[in-house]
Length: 109
Length: 113
Image (cartoon, rainbow over all chains, first blue to last red; front, side, top):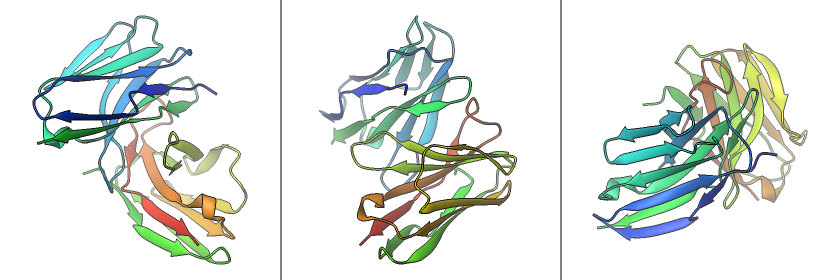
């Protein structure tokens, strides 16, 4: 089993603060995806990173794939209440897909 | 809007009941998935269908029985469930398996009494 551990498990911050969440594994993945899940809904894909060292930006969100393709981070600048949700990373291999344990983010107004 | 719908959204059932969850995707995808999401656990992949054929069954108990009559519809038949089966059951679809972006439905929140 390829385990993806996310940290922190829970994060509560004030609106306007910056934050980083992490997704770590001992396994190499061909790509890594980040999803956000809001209460009562299914996960929605935010980004897919494929190349080791790759950095992608989506407005205030910055995603980085580790050089060895074993880990990834998500940085949010100036968090907003709309960023509240469960953030999931998922690693893909040739014939499998593994989800991480999730980080539950709460942004307080 | 994900294009994947699930019914019912909420379900309460006794351990002796038989019920079915339904998933429909309007995206023209060829792969469909059932996942189980429990508190404090990673999302667990249960079944994968590719072009209507089951390609993966991740050691799921036989009290869960999937059915995929065509590429747009996926069912999960439930019978004699246990309280620990209470969870959010998510359906997803993708153009091809694994490597492609998965689009999730809103899930069915299941409570087994």
